[in-house]
Image (cartoon, rainbow, N blue to C red; front, side):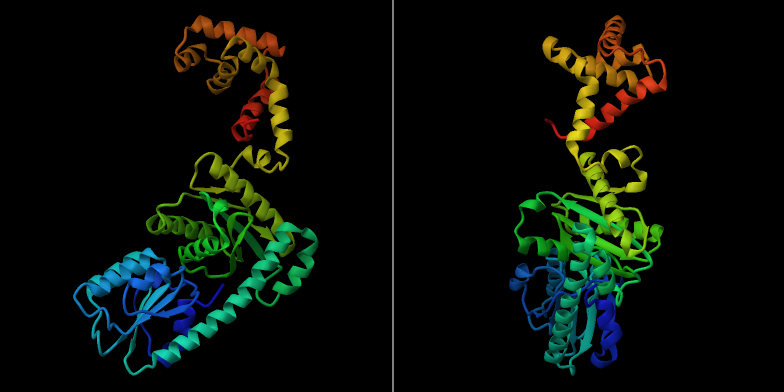
Length: 387
């Protein structure tokens, strides 16, 4: 979960006389580190999630502080603390408005507070939280990859999670993330974590198997989906060069069933990627719940090919469109006129093709029992990789 802006305010507000001026919705941001910055040159080197502190020495000119917060948003900073009272007396309204718009926490601390104390304190808290987060995420990774570790992981997580409670897994696929090096993946993980508003439960974020994973514990499903929708909007606003596909698994009871939610989130992510959807919940996938939960893709392809082999082979030999015609036959419930319009051909041609298909497949398509296997074949075709 990490050391967050909320934690900093809750635990040190009186000690450092902190005042939150803007970006309240981003206060759930976990902090990866703390930097003292007096110009924008170094900002491009930030990983993401850093808390930036400034005395304002290099930002006294009109518009300079606004330029700073623009850069912090661009490079995915977790928040800004301004040491007011010497170089900067008041925070301009346009800076406050922009931070609210971008959910960037903007905090002030008076000049008499020693920034060295603040930086050392927060960095120590970040280090401790990071160690704890790595340990927790490894328990989930172990559970996803090896079910025999679940009981051991359950004991390890008992101090931080309600292991008897509800769990739900979310996965995010990002274009070309499999080509990224570990450092870039960690940077992206930091950025994504920023886009979730306060999650009012115990949770864990980590990178696993080329996907960003989020596991939540005892969080209402409707509230969770609301958070996910807002997260997606924030990511598109601040990370618009990347294409995100989000899959949400079913909620399960007890940590022992965590792999069920993970596998369903994985199926939902595949669906989102295949059909170019932004956010997909496993419970809304219909028949694809079954098809995308089958891990052996060869079984799916063989089922499709064996069913439609006679017309596939016919099309290859005669450069025909029987397979395409059968697809539209099911789509338009056998209407020859609608099929003809869709395929830009004559109604009699469609009729001839349908009769040919029935003969080749030895099926009249009169009952649902006859139609169903072939309809399923086209669902399978949507998801199997070209062979």
